[in-house]
Length: 308
Ligand code: HSE
Image 1 (cartoon, rainbow, N blue to C red):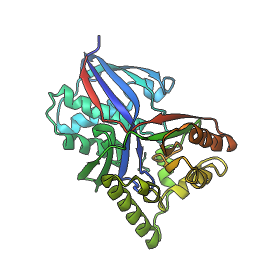
Image 2: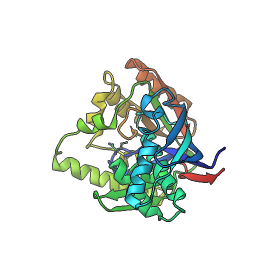
Image 3: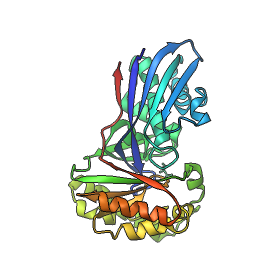
Image 4: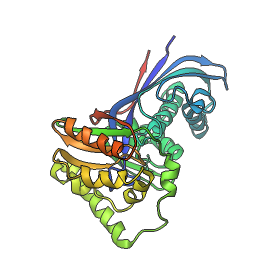
């Protein structure tokens, strides 16, 4: 028997210049189905699709959805229930498409549903961000669209921008190797030159203003970054990362490109047909010795919770 279904989108964070700030929901989903309410502290799960063989996902008590549910219950001061659930995963794991955020968002949203929907959107997002540590995946994952978020470790502010227009798609080229966000954060420098900080402030600001005003011609320049991508490109085999940022940006069909979140998926915003650009992206991975596959996605709405 199914009780509640939670459909949660993938996300692409940073969008180049907007490190830990910008993020967009994408039309690729993990679907979590709660089948049964069980006595407190009893959890069961079945995993299908991505991560079906991962011990961490299969062990219900270690599963991030359950851990996030329990943390949310503690934050909200509510008594946790036990439950059994199925997770049908289409979002690749540890590839920079927000798979962890889908579990965090589902766990916190479930705590809210099972306690009678007492908590506001901003209260839920604050707890989701606290669990994730940064807001740029969980905010678009929960509310959808393109979002700008600001987190100081306690308070969260966020604004949803208009969705990417239908004639612009997002190609996500996903290689067959993984990068853990923790490693991709460790590789970043402790400090950056002042001029690079100014570069990112101005480019992320232009990106947000352009997005709000529909100035899609400014996306490429707005997504340029000097804070994180050149460091993270070193986590890619050979010089795949640098090659992407250089060559894909110059492809005639590419509107703008970036490392998706902490990588290693690369995204490119494309206008019109996506075939040639998708092939070019996968070719760069195969030249670097990595197999890859790609998705052509739209900007998506947020999490949908439905009673079954
Ligand atoms: N903003 C985060 C980072 C996103 O780049 O580390 C991780 O998905």
